[in-house]
Length: 72
Image 1 (cartoon, one colour):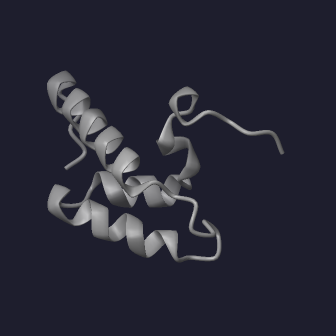
Image 2 (spheres, rainbow, N blue to C red):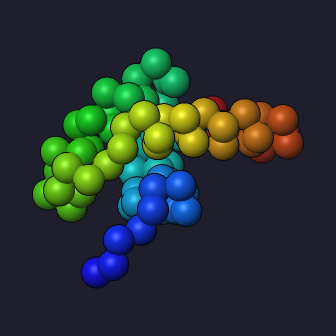
Image 3 (tube, rainbow, N blue to C red):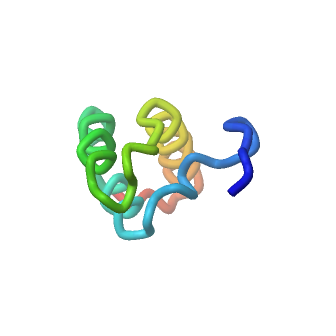
């Protein structure tokens, strides 16, 4: 597997769809802790970047809210 520069990949693509949906529906204050717990799951092997994912999720939620498609 080749090396991917962090700035060329959306950190949300590292999440399974069910985990992404759960995070999108969660209280923003709980997201970093939830990601850290997910990071310990065997499917992620401690490869999640909690800061990048949290930041991207908050951006995504703002876009959804502004478009009238808020999932929360």
